[in-house]
Length: 340
Ligand code: SF4
Image (tube, rainbow, N blue to C red; front, side, top):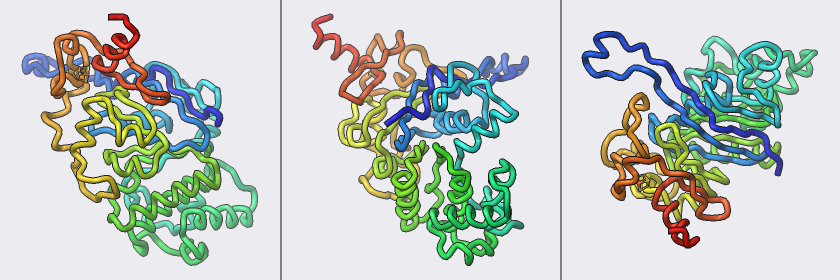
């Protein structure tokens, strides 16, 4: 495998304008640290799920990778090239050929006045990837077939309102695929679909990886879905990656108290179809504008101790491909090495 994407200490901070009233009411000013120092490397053909509650920063990471928001710090490298500050021009266009994003709400993403053909053809036209109409027909047809919309000619003539929810999500996937990207960022692509359709869409994405060696970043709040589709799972909390490992390690041997809480809040492994599995975690996610001191999970962590409230924990390696950002893991490693 070779590396396709590398994020180093990536930051996306959104400034907040704090007025006098905010000041008097004790509201935060400064910045919302949506993504706050994230390191992540993705290999070609790899599927990595980014898991967390709303407010974890997972969607902002996806949008930063797709260049829909600009990082405020750190670096983003794609195929070895530093793309961090690219924000327009030919370099951005060529990046868009390589990195596509799929959103949660397929109905919103599709123009109701356009046929499926025009929707899938749009990125090919706007990025000038085809020269003749025959070439355009072929590319659209291939993309529809790859996304499981067959026979393609029949679907190409339809409008979004003539399709089921699952078919609409397949059209969105076909639109992303048409440009033959090396990486797709999918933000909760199945969370609005019926349980029976979810597995089919996941299957399409997994087959695409097999056929095209395409890498996929799959953003979800749903740990069982992440386990089904991903090679590795990265767990985010308040803008930081708190645990990363193989899908099996994270699901069946989680080490971070937050991941353990996510796992325990999920009734069973499978395509659950349930919403809000994470809500049984105690307390609310604190604001990313007012991060707790020390470990940012400590106000909700049942295992927090004094050090957690004072110092941010470092990353600790607990397995070959398994890293945890927690003082318990780090102190256990130090003890095992005879350092304490
Ligand atoms: Fe809990 Fe402390 Fe580990 Fe943070 S560092 S997750 S507060 S035990």
